[in-house]
Length: 137
Image 1 (cartoon, rainbow, N blue to C red):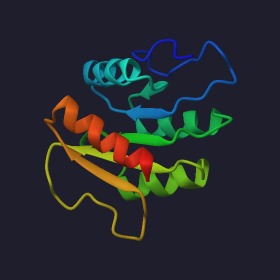
Image 2 (image 1 turned 90 degrees about the vertical axis):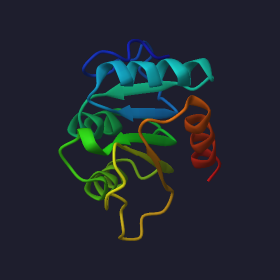
Image 3 (image 1 turned 45 degrees about the vertical axis):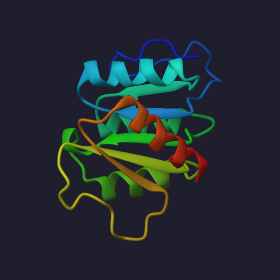
Image 4 (image 1 turned 60 degrees about the vertical axis):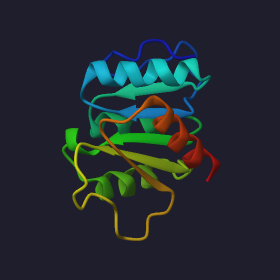
């Protein structure tokens, strides 16, 4: 299903395949490590390095991912703007996990549901626990 998560724009071997989780993180090494961890847990994963690429990729999927992991500190649009645009693009994205280096006022305050938060650095068990909660939502 998932070809290469370190490419600028993820490509799938099967055009009908859609990931269960999409990662938007500019740090290629972190994006790759997250994808490896999640793939070992059995998730189909796609990853890109910028919010605009993520929105384009969302439009291309026949089925939206169930979770989008968004690195707030490393993208050029706010979490609220991204979530709004993503929901307009792929209304069936069920949850968002926002990753950040700090705890500032980054959480959407305009009624978005199914938005989760994790602060870097985080542990793998902590990450997997919050991903499971987000997917169970």
